[in-house]
Length: 198
Image (cartoon, rainbow, N blue to C red; front, side):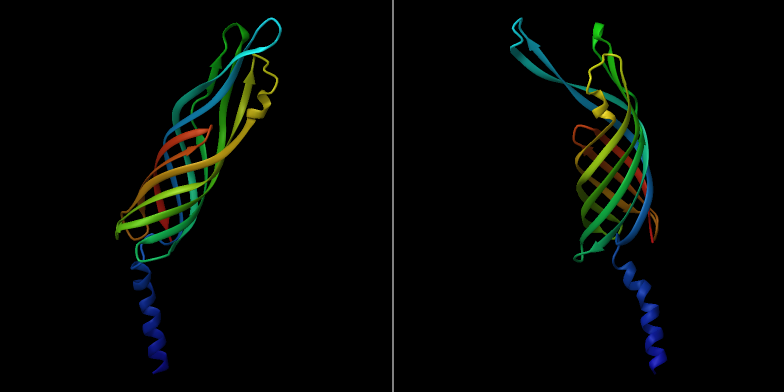
C-alpha cells in the first residue's frame, strides 16, 4: 500500500506543475528595436562669465539589438506571478552629437545589463501580461573630438528601468514574448523573445 501511494503522488506531480503555467526557471533569447539616447547640457554666459541660460539636448540613435535573459517565476495566487530576471543586451547604432566647429561626441554601444522584478497576471493558461521594474546599465566606447573633458563618465551609465510585456505559451516549454523596456537616460527597446521554461 505504501509503495502504491508513493507512486500515485510521483505521477501526479507533473500534472500539478502544468496547472501552474508561467512558473519556475526560464531562459531565452530576444531581439528587435533598440534606441540609445543621452543628453548634453549647454550653458550660455556673458562677458563677465555670468550664467545667462542653460538647456539640455537629447541625442538618439535607432538600430537593431538582441540579448539573453534568465530568471525564475513563482505563483503567488491562481493567476498572480512574481519573478526575478537578469538580462544582457548588445547592438544598436552609434549615437553621435555633432557640435559643429567644436567637434563631436560619439557613443558606440558595447553591452547592457539589467536586473528586474516582474509582476504578472495570467489571462489564460497560454497567455500572461506583466510589468517590470528594476535597474540597468550600458557600456559605451566614447569618441570625443570636442574635448569636453568629462566625456569619460559616459563610458558606463546606469539608472532605473521600467517595462511591460506579454508572454504566450506555444508548447509546454517554449513560448513567445513581446517585451518593452526603458532604462532612464540610456535605452528604450521593444524586443520579441523566445522563453524556454523548465
